[in-house]
Length: 162
Image 1 (cartoon, one colour):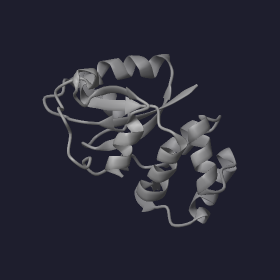
Image 2: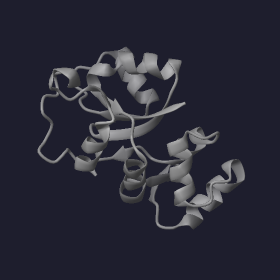
Image 3: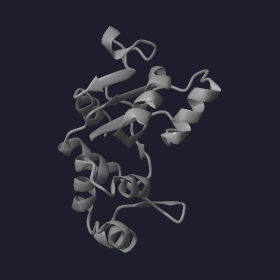
Image 4: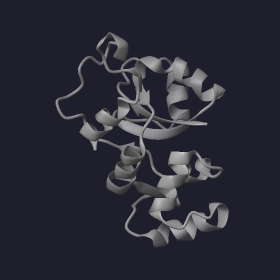
């Protein structure tokens, strides 16, 4: 199983089908990002909304930085900052045996059996615009633009945005 980090690049003139896929990914604002498990269904969803998102395969350092610096928990529909392990322990210990922030990082990085609980427990990451700005939002990454599959280069982008 592979792990992806999807990041919304633009939302100009989005077709209804694409908007629905972005909502399923929980990407509702520009510069929001989420962790996604890579399977056949998500690959098809990525193809549908490709011109609007950048995605790639994050490393452990990027995941840890995102969760520690930009991580918020979803508790009773509210966005609560991760201040200590007690919040995580109360909510996730029963369902998934995740007891601390490092367990959460490990579960996401390894795409473990409780990946879905862990990612849905996190609020979508609200990131800054990258330092130096976007290059060309309207072009694919392969053509020197911003959207599309960046593979391992997503880590450099995340470093500029966190």
